Length: 239
Image (cartoon, rainbow, N blue to C red; front, side, top):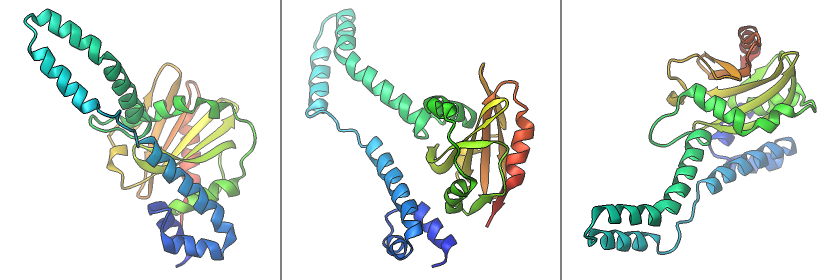
């Protein structure tokens, strides 16, 4: 297979036997394979939550016991005390899944998800060590693209899960502060919800669409975000 086909298959399945076989023949690709496999394993482990042994039986037993209570007020008060730890744990886990791993059930707005993602990895905004454009393009090539240049010094470049889609997460430093860019491959309809601008009291963002990817930029309020978004999207090339 050619390099483009190799990268596409790697994104689709990091444990593809043919991909692993070719990577062994080309050592320069082996690091990319290992990174994608590590990311894929991380996602699997993050969603692999063990249920406490006997939990279902205990809940059913408690429910039956509650049904025999004569006074509704007493019954509801006891039930809330008994189930509160489980409810709190479930709520925390559900919130983390929704805002970081793409959400189950009620869909999260793309802008809200982008903001939550930036806050979740807020430490990336403080990084200063330069990541080369070559390194960025090696990662982006896995989606079939490349940047000619970028409007800031790249200090963070990694794969991420954006609403269930493997994507590229970049942070650049500029005179206006850090700029976060998400490149989300097209075909994931949950990233297209008709709202191309968003923000909160600290950040604002824009979403640009083309046939290959959705490019999402988040920056401090007061940043000329339209200018930066235009520079990013005009520099993005597809192979």
